[in-house]
Amino acid sequence: MDIIVFDLGGVCIFNFQTIGKIALHYHLNEADVYAEYMRSDIPLMEGVMTTKEWWKAASEKFGVDSDADPLVDLFTPYPNAPVLALVDELRSRGKRVVCGSNTCEGHWQKMNACASLESHFDRCYLSQRMGLAKPDVRFFDYILRAEGVEASRALFIDDTKANIEGAEKAGMRGFLFRDEFSWAALDKLRSIVL
Image 1 (cartoon, rainbow, N blue to C red):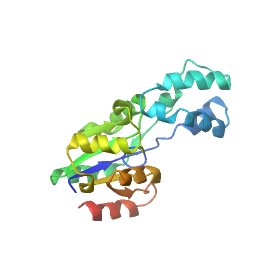
Image 2 (cartoon, rainbow, N blue to C red):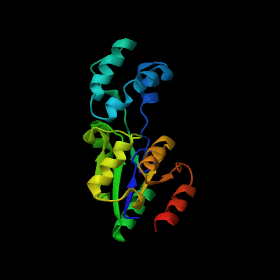
Image 3 (cartoon, helix red, strand yellow):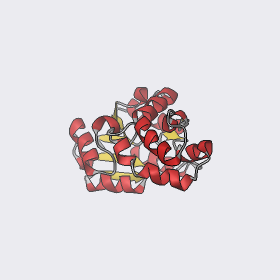
């Protein structure tokens, strides 16, 4: 592999979900908040819409305080230290390691603050700055072009099957990472990349 691309939320970062927290905080039905979020998920991830713009529309629909920014305010990420240690180990062995993540600017700022992500990766490819979001093949093509790497020489690691399928459609090798409560996925990943 010439390059290894890690997703952030669910791989390098935990506790990245905020919809349930928003529902609880504002006494709303979680399914309703989730449905409202999903109507704007891609525009949020591609940087077309800000979290404040989303909440203004959502809060008007739900009849609650519209001056807040709960997608950011209630976002409390923490690092997956063993995965970030693997990233550091890979880089110390001369591997090119980048992150490729769907995120909004407020979430990126909090994730980077809690885990110093820019110090772990050679480069960070963030959907809101690229104007592209996974699982769109163009997201992966953008990274491959920027890195000057053939797709067959790239590994993409994510916790969402649809995103792995997008990477594979772009010609990359994919690894579905599901490891929040066990070491099995990390052990398997280590055996592939080291």
